[in-house]
Image 1: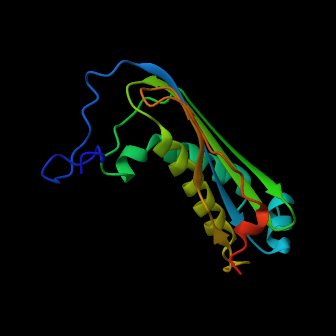
Image 2: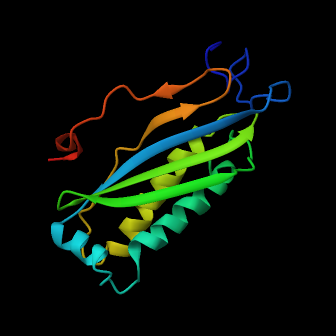
Length: 168
C-alpha cells in the first residue's frame, strides 16, 4: 500500500502529514452534470419553481460544501480557501453543466473541495426540482485540472461528448 498516502505501512488509515511541505499557490477545477427533462430545465432558467432560484441556491450550496469538505471526507485537511467559484449553465435542452474552481495558498491540494462543490451543487438542483422531475440523473463528476504542489499540474486529457452523459 506504499502508493496510497492515506494508509500507513500496516494498512491503517491516516491523515497525511503535510507539516514539512512548502506552501504553494494551488487551484483545482471540477465539473458535474445534471440531466433532466427539457421542461425542468426551462422551469429552472425561467425561475418558475416554487422553491426559488435553483441556480443561485445550488451555487451557494456548492460554495458552502467546498468550505466544509473536511467535515464530509474523513481524511481531508481543513483548509483556508481563498476563493470558490461555482458556475451553472444550461447545455442543450436537458443538461445543466456545473463547474467549480477553488483556490488557496497552502500545503495540500484542493481537488476534493472542487469535487465536493460540484457534487453538492448537483444534489441541490435535484432537491429543489424533484417535485417536478424525479428522474434526473447526476454526474459524472470529475476533476478537470489542478495546479500547484509537489505533483505539479494536471489537465484532463479528453472531454467526453454530451452523449456519454446519457444513461439510457
